[in-house]
Length: 399
Image (cartoon, rainbow, N blue to C red; front, side, top):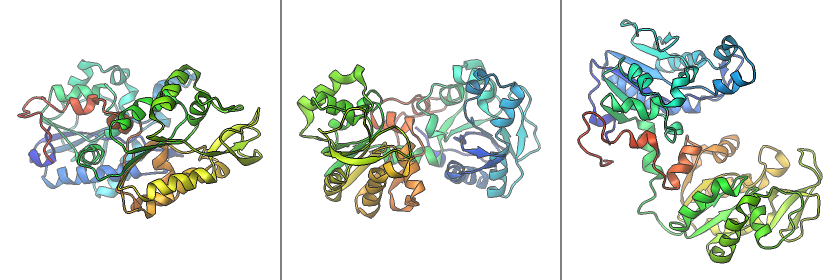
């Protein structure tokens, strides 16, 4: 795989796939984290004085809005990349020309061109090769920097590298370096939270081969409790994976730490009455919504001895303040830790950003599903596509 340092962009038309799926409200970007993360790549390319920088990205899910009955005009207004282009223009102190769709020719004059939302075209998510070839025809070289969607086989992810000399951008390079868990210091602890055991089971199985200890939180703990024969009240149960839970309990409890107590609520609501109970004493009709104080202490003792920690998924319903204590406590323990701390994107990253603790962590991934798939050892189409593309001399990664 090649990286920016391996490529020459001078007087070239450079196509960059970015991950600018950012929150927008009333036409303004409300969280520009992903935009800021891509700026080093864009600045590096511009320093080499390319003929043109062409930026492509997606935003949201147009198909979902269409399925809800919204008109094409409404969809395009709601999920336009124009607010993102404004942010980029401001950060780079350059004008950014907006190309409305992928059927028009790219104008020669503008130094920076940004195409509208890739997903306005159904061919993108279909992985249509002709669509990928059309986009590739606008440029001389391709830079992949959208790690957050590298687990998708979309046209701009897996397709474009078939037609252009390609490399990874700085953000993608950083993600690969930090999420490749080799020669790690031990004890190595993985924290895995989330709602359904089904979703996180591949990650748990992957970390059973790598980590010294796995701390499990989130609603999936109730499927594990059920496997132990505990009553779980109205708590979420992933019944289709109960046998998998029984297998984990039977064979891996020496490596998997599950919460000792939980915060339960009399209804699934932000204003519910709540209390802490030991894991085996959840009453009928009560919901488990967070890990309890004994669990926080138990997990904290393990984490304070760790040299490497990977965290993916919250400990409870962290969006509601009274059920965010477990997630917040883990974040604060890790923020004070001297261990290498890697956050696997998604809700874990959101919790850390909310607490303004970002600077205290070694790496916070921009990917949710992509980081989870990478950590689980899956091959990501977007990364695989960068190996063996036209002009590629080697399939080895050089850091």
